[in-house]
Amino acid sequence: MSIRRFMLRASSFLPLFSPWEKSQWITSDDTVRNGTSQSFLDIVDPGAPENPFPLSIAKFHGHLDYDTLGGSGFASQRTINDWPGLDLSDYDHIVIEIPYTDGKKYTINLKDTVLPPTESGAEQATISWGFDFQLPATETKQRKGAIDRVVINFADLVPTFRGRVQNDTAPLDLANIKRVSIMIRSFFAKQNGNFELRIKSINAKSSAPSLLKMRSIL
Image (cartoon, rainbow, N blue to C red; front, side, top):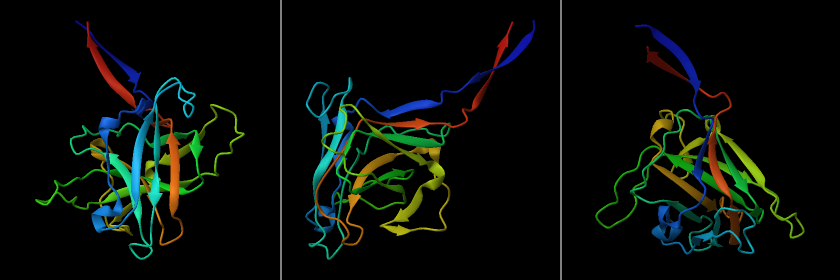
């Protein structure tokens, strides 16, 4: 009997959201704080005028209002409470493919801790690891099927609690991502009104794929 050791490369690409499934997402707007912002996540099937791609895409849209809450406001869509979660420990960044944007600033958030709702059904706040991104508004004359890509390194995610930056948190546990959310915020009365962002896909990638050790016995 002999033992042979060899190495295999781990996958450097993991599709997170593509194709999109509406059943995985739920609304989480500032109405929980008596605001009036409203968001929707529509799934646009291939062949529709807004989707020239072979797989479904997501259309995040609605109305952002900051007057009701005195300058602050947010609208978001997040993964549902019983979403199975993700292990992203083999990856170091995510890529968001965007075929259309209105030019507003958006945020993607990851959570490694989620608490059950209160008896009244209200969400309990935990640390969010977020990244803000903004692209120029898509021109109507832009080539059909063109996309922009936002690359987000996990090392650049910022931990916040109720919108306030936290400087003494433990590192994000990439092996136990329990929630993902797509958000638009007023940034203290800097943006409001109707919004629309279309997302082709969100994928995890690794700049330097990890190596898996394997052993075979002959």
